[in-house]
Image (cartoon, rainbow, N blue to C red; front, top):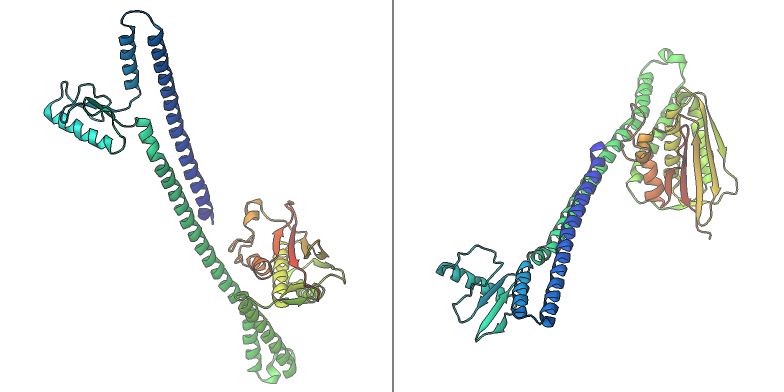
Length: 397
Protein backbone atom coordinates (compact mmCIF):
# COMPACT_ATOMS: atom_id res chain seq x y z
CA UNK A 1 0.00 0.00 0.00
CA UNK A 2 2.90 2.35 0.69
CA UNK A 3 4.09 2.20 -2.93
CA UNK A 4 0.61 2.82 -4.31
CA UNK A 5 0.20 5.86 -2.04
CA UNK A 6 3.42 7.37 -3.48
CA UNK A 7 1.99 7.43 -7.00
CA UNK A 8 -0.36 10.39 -6.41
CA UNK A 9 2.58 12.32 -4.98
CA UNK A 10 4.67 11.54 -8.07
CA UNK A 11 1.86 12.57 -10.41
CA UNK A 12 1.33 15.75 -8.43
CA UNK A 13 5.05 16.54 -8.68
CA UNK A 14 4.96 15.93 -12.46
CA UNK A 15 1.96 18.20 -12.91
CA UNK A 16 3.57 20.88 -10.73
CA UNK A 17 6.76 20.65 -12.80
CA UNK A 18 4.79 21.12 -16.02
CA UNK A 19 2.94 24.04 -14.51
CA UNK A 20 6.15 25.76 -13.36
CA UNK A 21 7.73 25.19 -16.78
CA UNK A 22 4.64 26.63 -18.45
CA UNK A 23 4.70 29.71 -16.22
CA UNK A 24 8.41 30.29 -16.87
CA UNK A 25 7.97 29.79 -20.61
CA UNK A 26 5.01 32.14 -20.89
CA UNK A 27 6.76 34.62 -18.61
CA UNK A 28 9.68 34.80 -21.03
CA UNK A 29 7.31 35.34 -23.94
CA UNK A 30 5.49 38.10 -22.07
CA UNK A 31 8.78 39.83 -21.31
CA UNK A 32 9.71 39.55 -24.99
CA UNK A 33 6.41 41.09 -26.04
CA UNK A 34 6.99 43.91 -23.56
CA UNK A 35 10.35 44.54 -25.20
CA UNK A 36 8.63 44.59 -28.62
CA UNK A 37 6.15 47.14 -27.32
CA UNK A 38 9.05 49.31 -26.20
CA UNK A 39 10.62 49.02 -29.67
CA UNK A 40 7.33 49.99 -31.35
CA UNK A 41 7.14 52.99 -29.05
CA UNK A 42 10.65 54.04 -30.05
CA UNK A 43 9.66 53.66 -33.71
CA UNK A 44 6.67 55.90 -33.13
CA UNK A 45 8.88 58.46 -31.39
CA UNK A 46 11.35 58.44 -34.29
CA UNK A 47 8.54 58.98 -36.80
CA UNK A 48 7.23 61.88 -34.78
CA UNK A 49 10.70 63.35 -34.51
CA UNK A 50 11.31 63.07 -38.27
CA UNK A 51 7.96 64.64 -39.10
CA UNK A 52 8.45 67.64 -36.82
CA UNK A 53 12.19 68.25 -37.28
CA UNK A 54 13.31 71.10 -39.59
CA UNK A 55 16.96 70.05 -39.72
CA UNK A 56 18.42 69.04 -43.12
CA UNK A 57 18.75 65.27 -43.45
CA UNK A 58 16.52 64.60 -40.45
CA UNK A 59 14.15 62.45 -42.49
CA UNK A 60 16.95 60.21 -43.76
CA UNK A 61 18.35 59.80 -40.27
CA UNK A 62 14.91 58.95 -38.96
CA UNK A 63 14.42 56.34 -41.68
CA UNK A 64 17.78 54.77 -40.90
CA UNK A 65 16.89 54.61 -37.22
CA UNK A 66 13.49 53.12 -38.04
CA UNK A 67 15.08 50.38 -40.13
CA UNK A 68 17.48 49.53 -37.32
CA UNK A 69 14.67 49.38 -34.80
CA UNK A 70 12.61 47.11 -37.06
CA UNK A 71 15.58 44.77 -37.42
CA UNK A 72 15.83 44.63 -33.62
CA UNK A 73 12.32 43.19 -33.51
CA UNK A 74 13.71 39.96 -34.95
CA UNK A 75 11.24 39.74 -37.86
CA UNK A 76 12.91 37.99 -40.84
CA UNK A 77 12.88 40.15 -44.01
CA UNK A 78 13.86 39.12 -47.55
CA UNK A 79 13.88 41.96 -50.11
CA UNK A 80 13.66 41.01 -53.81
CA UNK A 81 13.17 42.95 -57.01
CA UNK A 82 13.04 41.04 -60.25
CA UNK A 83 12.90 37.23 -60.15
CA UNK A 84 16.19 35.72 -59.02
CA UNK A 85 17.58 38.96 -57.57
CA UNK A 86 17.98 39.50 -53.84
CA UNK A 87 18.95 42.75 -52.12
CA UNK A 88 21.62 42.73 -49.47
CA UNK A 89 19.13 44.23 -47.05
CA UNK A 90 17.66 40.82 -46.16
CA UNK A 91 17.95 40.45 -42.38
CA UNK A 92 17.15 38.12 -39.47
CA UNK A 93 17.49 35.02 -41.63
CA UNK A 94 17.48 31.66 -39.78
CA UNK A 95 20.80 30.75 -41.45
CA UNK A 96 24.20 32.32 -42.14
CA UNK A 97 25.00 33.92 -45.52
CA UNK A 98 28.17 35.45 -46.95
CA UNK A 99 28.62 39.15 -47.52
CA UNK A 100 28.08 39.58 -50.42
CA UNK A 101 25.88 36.48 -50.89
CA UNK A 102 27.23 33.70 -53.08
CA UNK A 103 25.03 32.16 -55.80
CA UNK A 104 24.26 29.29 -53.42
CA UNK A 105 23.29 31.80 -50.74
CA UNK A 106 21.01 33.62 -53.18
CA UNK A 107 19.29 30.37 -54.15
CA UNK A 108 18.81 29.46 -50.48
CA UNK A 109 17.42 32.95 -49.68
CA UNK A 110 14.97 32.74 -52.59
CA UNK A 111 13.72 29.34 -51.41
CA UNK A 112 13.28 30.82 -47.94
CA UNK A 113 11.32 33.76 -49.46
CA UNK A 114 8.99 31.28 -51.18
CA UNK A 115 8.49 29.54 -47.85
CA UNK A 116 7.63 32.87 -46.21
CA UNK A 117 5.12 33.63 -48.98
CA UNK A 118 3.19 30.44 -48.13
CA UNK A 119 2.40 31.99 -44.73
CA UNK A 120 2.28 35.74 -45.43
CA UNK A 121 1.54 37.77 -48.52
CA UNK A 122 4.64 39.84 -49.48
CA UNK A 123 4.41 43.61 -49.18
CA UNK A 124 5.41 46.08 -51.87
CA UNK A 125 5.30 46.49 -55.65
CA UNK A 126 6.07 43.33 -57.67
CA UNK A 127 7.48 45.49 -60.47
CA UNK A 128 10.05 47.24 -58.27
CA UNK A 129 10.56 45.75 -54.80
CA UNK A 130 8.88 43.10 -52.65
CA UNK A 131 9.45 42.52 -48.94
CA UNK A 132 8.87 38.94 -47.84
CA UNK A 133 8.46 38.61 -44.09
CA UNK A 134 7.98 35.98 -41.43
CA UNK A 135 7.28 35.94 -37.73
CA UNK A 136 9.46 36.70 -34.73
CA UNK A 137 11.17 33.89 -32.78
CA UNK A 138 8.82 34.59 -29.86
CA UNK A 139 5.76 34.18 -32.09
CA UNK A 140 7.26 30.94 -33.43
CA UNK A 141 7.63 29.69 -29.88
CA UNK A 142 4.03 30.66 -29.17
CA UNK A 143 2.90 28.45 -32.04
CA UNK A 144 4.25 25.40 -30.21
CA UNK A 145 2.79 26.38 -26.85
CA UNK A 146 -0.66 24.72 -27.25
CA UNK A 147 0.93 21.48 -28.49
CA UNK A 148 3.50 21.38 -25.70
CA UNK A 149 0.92 22.13 -23.01
CA UNK A 150 -1.58 19.65 -24.44
CA UNK A 151 1.14 17.00 -24.65
CA UNK A 152 2.10 17.57 -21.04
CA UNK A 153 -1.51 17.30 -19.91
CA UNK A 154 -2.03 14.21 -22.05
CA UNK A 155 1.01 12.50 -20.53
CA UNK A 156 -0.19 13.39 -17.03
CA UNK A 157 -3.70 12.10 -17.72
CA UNK A 158 -2.42 8.88 -19.28
CA UNK A 159 -0.13 8.27 -16.33
CA UNK A 160 -2.94 9.02 -13.90
CA UNK A 161 -5.31 6.61 -15.69
CA UNK A 162 -2.64 3.92 -15.80
CA UNK A 163 -1.83 4.32 -12.12
CA UNK A 164 -5.54 4.40 -11.20
CA UNK A 165 -6.21 1.19 -13.10
CA UNK A 166 -3.16 -0.45 -11.56
CA UNK A 167 -4.19 0.58 -8.05
CA UNK A 168 -7.75 -0.54 -8.66
CA UNK A 169 -6.60 -3.93 -9.94
CA UNK A 170 -4.18 -4.29 -7.03
CA UNK A 171 -6.86 -3.34 -4.51
CA UNK A 172 -9.27 -5.85 -6.05
CA UNK A 173 -6.64 -8.58 -5.90
CA UNK A 174 -5.89 -7.75 -2.28
CA UNK A 175 -9.60 -7.75 -1.44
CA UNK A 176 -10.24 -11.12 -3.05
CA UNK A 177 -7.12 -12.59 -1.48
CA UNK A 178 -8.15 -11.31 1.95
CA UNK A 179 -11.70 -12.58 1.48
CA UNK A 180 -10.43 -16.01 0.46
CA UNK A 181 -8.29 -16.16 3.59
CA UNK A 182 -11.15 -14.94 5.73
CA UNK A 183 -13.45 -17.57 4.22
CA UNK A 184 -10.90 -20.29 4.90
CA UNK A 185 -10.52 -19.00 8.46
CA UNK A 186 -14.27 -18.93 9.15
CA UNK A 187 -14.81 -22.34 7.59
CA UNK A 188 -11.87 -23.81 9.48
CA UNK A 189 -13.44 -23.56 12.95
CA UNK A 190 -16.67 -25.52 12.30
CA UNK A 191 -14.85 -27.98 10.05
CA UNK A 192 -12.33 -28.71 12.81
CA UNK A 193 -15.19 -29.11 15.24
CA UNK A 194 -16.96 -31.52 12.90
CA UNK A 195 -13.78 -33.55 12.54
CA UNK A 196 -13.61 -33.81 16.32
CA UNK A 197 -17.21 -34.96 16.58
CA UNK A 198 -16.63 -37.55 13.86
CA UNK A 199 -13.75 -38.93 15.89
CA UNK A 200 -15.98 -39.05 18.98
CA UNK A 201 -18.65 -40.91 17.01
CA UNK A 202 -16.03 -43.46 16.02
CA UNK A 203 -15.46 -44.38 19.65
CA UNK A 204 -17.48 -46.92 21.56
CA UNK A 205 -20.16 -45.28 23.73
CA UNK A 206 -18.24 -46.14 26.86
CA UNK A 207 -15.03 -44.56 25.56
CA UNK A 208 -16.56 -41.20 24.66
CA UNK A 209 -15.47 -38.23 26.86
CA UNK A 210 -18.00 -37.62 29.61
CA UNK A 211 -20.19 -40.44 28.28
CA UNK A 212 -21.68 -38.01 25.77
CA UNK A 213 -25.07 -39.23 24.57
CA UNK A 214 -25.80 -39.58 20.89
CA UNK A 215 -28.37 -36.78 20.90
CA UNK A 216 -25.92 -34.25 22.35
CA UNK A 217 -23.36 -35.09 19.71
CA UNK A 218 -26.02 -34.75 17.02
CA UNK A 219 -27.04 -31.33 18.35
CA UNK A 220 -23.41 -30.14 18.36
CA UNK A 221 -22.92 -31.36 14.79
CA UNK A 222 -26.12 -29.59 13.81
CA UNK A 223 -24.83 -26.31 15.27
CA UNK A 224 -21.59 -26.64 13.32
CA UNK A 225 -23.53 -27.31 10.14
CA UNK A 226 -25.61 -24.20 10.77
CA UNK A 227 -22.40 -22.19 11.18
CA UNK A 228 -21.06 -23.61 7.91
CA UNK A 229 -24.29 -22.75 6.13
CA UNK A 230 -24.22 -19.21 7.56
CA UNK A 231 -20.64 -18.61 6.43
CA UNK A 232 -21.21 -19.96 2.92
CA UNK A 233 -24.45 -17.99 2.62
CA UNK A 234 -22.77 -14.76 3.65
CA UNK A 235 -19.94 -15.02 1.14
CA UNK A 236 -22.39 -16.05 -1.55
CA UNK A 237 -24.46 -12.91 -0.95
CA UNK A 238 -21.50 -10.50 -0.88
CA UNK A 239 -20.79 -11.14 -4.56
CA UNK A 240 -24.36 -10.40 -5.66
CA UNK A 241 -26.95 -7.64 -5.55
CA UNK A 242 -29.39 -9.16 -3.05
CA UNK A 243 -32.98 -8.07 -2.82
CA UNK A 244 -33.46 -5.46 -0.11
CA UNK A 245 -36.52 -5.68 2.10
CA UNK A 246 -37.92 -4.02 5.22
CA UNK A 247 -35.63 -4.94 8.12
CA UNK A 248 -36.08 -4.19 11.81
CA UNK A 249 -32.79 -2.96 13.24
CA UNK A 250 -34.25 -3.57 16.70
CA UNK A 251 -34.47 -7.30 15.94
CA UNK A 252 -31.07 -7.35 14.19
CA UNK A 253 -29.33 -5.77 17.17
CA UNK A 254 -31.20 -8.00 19.65
CA UNK A 255 -30.24 -11.17 17.78
CA UNK A 256 -26.67 -9.96 17.42
CA UNK A 257 -26.50 -9.26 21.14
CA UNK A 258 -27.75 -12.75 21.97
CA UNK A 259 -25.25 -14.26 19.53
CA UNK A 260 -22.28 -12.26 20.85
CA UNK A 261 -22.99 -12.53 24.59
CA UNK A 262 -22.66 -16.31 24.42
CA UNK A 263 -19.22 -15.87 22.85
CA UNK A 264 -17.96 -12.93 24.93
CA UNK A 265 -16.27 -15.11 27.56
CA UNK A 266 -14.12 -16.60 24.80
CA UNK A 267 -13.78 -13.69 22.34
CA UNK A 268 -13.61 -10.80 24.82
CA UNK A 269 -13.30 -11.72 28.47
CA UNK A 270 -14.03 -8.72 30.67
CA UNK A 271 -15.90 -6.87 27.91
CA UNK A 272 -19.49 -5.73 28.51
CA UNK A 273 -21.95 -5.30 25.65
CA UNK A 274 -24.56 -2.54 25.97
CA UNK A 275 -27.53 -1.68 23.75
CA UNK A 276 -29.27 1.67 23.34
CA UNK A 277 -31.82 1.11 20.61
CA UNK A 278 -35.39 2.48 21.00
CA UNK A 279 -38.27 0.12 20.30
CA UNK A 280 -39.87 2.63 17.92
CA UNK A 281 -36.78 2.88 15.72
CA UNK A 282 -37.86 3.04 12.03
CA UNK A 283 -37.19 -0.01 9.90
CA UNK A 284 -34.49 0.17 7.25
CA UNK A 285 -34.34 -1.04 3.69
CA UNK A 286 -31.76 -3.76 3.75
CA UNK A 287 -30.75 -7.40 3.92
CA UNK A 288 -30.89 -8.90 7.40
CA UNK A 289 -28.13 -11.48 6.94
CA UNK A 290 -25.66 -8.97 5.47
CA UNK A 291 -26.47 -6.24 7.99
CA UNK A 292 -25.91 -8.68 10.85
CA UNK A 293 -22.58 -9.66 9.31
CA UNK A 294 -21.53 -6.02 8.89
CA UNK A 295 -22.25 -5.18 12.54
CA UNK A 296 -20.68 -8.42 13.74
CA UNK A 297 -17.44 -7.52 11.92
CA UNK A 298 -17.27 -4.15 13.69
CA UNK A 299 -17.93 -5.71 17.09
CA UNK A 300 -15.34 -8.43 16.56
CA UNK A 301 -12.86 -5.76 15.49
CA UNK A 302 -13.52 -3.94 18.77
CA UNK A 303 -13.18 -7.17 20.77
CA UNK A 304 -9.83 -7.88 19.13
CA UNK A 305 -8.67 -4.35 19.97
CA UNK A 306 -9.64 -4.78 23.64
CA UNK A 307 -8.24 -8.31 23.98
CA UNK A 308 -7.01 -8.86 27.54
CA UNK A 309 -7.83 -5.32 28.71
CA UNK A 310 -11.61 -5.45 29.18
CA UNK A 311 -13.93 -2.54 28.57
CA UNK A 312 -17.31 -2.00 26.98
CA UNK A 313 -18.99 -1.87 23.60
CA UNK A 314 -22.16 0.16 23.12
CA UNK A 315 -24.50 -0.19 20.16
CA UNK A 316 -26.89 2.74 19.74
CA UNK A 317 -29.31 3.76 17.01
CA UNK A 318 -31.43 6.82 16.29
CA UNK A 319 -33.64 8.08 13.51
CA UNK A 320 -31.95 10.91 11.63
CA UNK A 321 -33.33 13.73 9.54
CA UNK A 322 -34.42 12.84 6.07
CA UNK A 323 -34.57 9.20 5.06
CA UNK A 324 -31.75 7.86 7.22
CA UNK A 325 -31.24 5.81 10.37
CA UNK A 326 -27.94 6.20 12.22
CA UNK A 327 -26.36 3.27 14.03
CA UNK A 328 -23.20 3.71 16.12
CA UNK A 329 -20.85 1.20 17.70
CA UNK A 330 -18.61 2.70 20.36
CA UNK A 331 -15.85 0.86 22.22
CA UNK A 332 -13.43 1.84 24.97
CA UNK A 333 -10.41 0.15 23.43
CA UNK A 334 -6.99 1.62 22.60
CA UNK A 335 -8.20 3.34 19.45
CA UNK A 336 -6.74 3.33 15.95
CA UNK A 337 -3.15 4.38 15.15
CA UNK A 338 -3.09 7.72 13.35
CA UNK A 339 -1.10 6.34 10.43
CA UNK A 340 -3.86 3.94 9.34
CA UNK A 341 -7.03 5.86 10.21
CA UNK A 342 -7.53 7.10 6.66
CA UNK A 343 -7.01 3.57 5.31
CA UNK A 344 -8.94 1.64 7.95
CA UNK A 345 -11.50 0.32 5.45
CA UNK A 346 -8.93 -0.62 2.78
CA UNK A 347 -8.40 -4.34 2.18
CA UNK A 348 -5.40 -5.78 4.01
CA UNK A 349 -5.22 -2.94 6.58
CA UNK A 350 -5.38 -4.29 10.13
CA UNK A 351 -3.98 -3.63 13.59
CA UNK A 352 -3.87 -7.35 14.37
CA UNK A 353 -0.68 -9.33 13.79
CA UNK A 354 -2.61 -12.35 12.56
CA UNK A 355 -5.55 -10.70 10.84
CA UNK A 356 -6.33 -10.46 7.15
CA UNK A 357 -7.76 -6.92 7.27
CA UNK A 358 -11.01 -7.82 5.51
CA UNK A 359 -13.70 -7.43 8.21
CA UNK A 360 -14.12 -3.65 7.98
CA UNK A 361 -13.69 -3.82 4.20
CA UNK A 362 -16.67 -6.18 4.03
CA UNK A 363 -18.62 -3.88 6.36
CA UNK A 364 -18.00 -0.93 4.03
CA UNK A 365 -18.97 -3.03 1.01
CA UNK A 366 -22.22 -4.13 2.70
CA UNK A 367 -23.26 -0.71 4.04
CA UNK A 368 -22.23 1.41 1.07
CA UNK A 369 -22.15 -0.95 -1.91
CA UNK A 370 -25.23 -3.02 -1.10
CA UNK A 371 -27.38 -0.65 0.96
CA UNK A 372 -26.35 2.72 -0.50
CA UNK A 373 -25.47 4.08 2.94
CA UNK A 374 -22.26 5.28 4.49
CA UNK A 375 -19.93 3.95 7.18
CA UNK A 376 -17.15 5.98 8.77
CA UNK A 377 -14.91 6.35 11.78
CA UNK A 378 -16.81 9.11 13.50
CA UNK A 379 -14.26 10.58 15.91
CA UNK A 380 -10.50 10.81 16.11
CA UNK A 381 -9.98 10.39 19.86
CA UNK A 382 -6.74 8.84 21.02
CA UNK A 383 -8.60 6.03 22.79
CA UNK A 384 -11.70 4.19 21.75
CA UNK A 385 -13.47 4.14 18.40
CA UNK A 386 -16.92 5.14 17.25
CA UNK A 387 -18.12 3.68 13.98
CA UNK A 388 -21.24 5.17 12.45
CA UNK A 389 -23.35 3.50 9.79
CA UNK A 390 -25.99 5.52 7.96
CA UNK A 391 -28.71 3.27 6.52
CA UNK A 392 -31.74 4.17 4.38
CA UNK A 393 -35.16 4.02 5.97
CA UNK A 394 -37.71 1.59 4.57
CA UNK A 395 -40.34 3.27 2.42
CA UNK A 396 -43.64 3.59 4.27
CA UNK A 397 -46.32 1.47 2.66
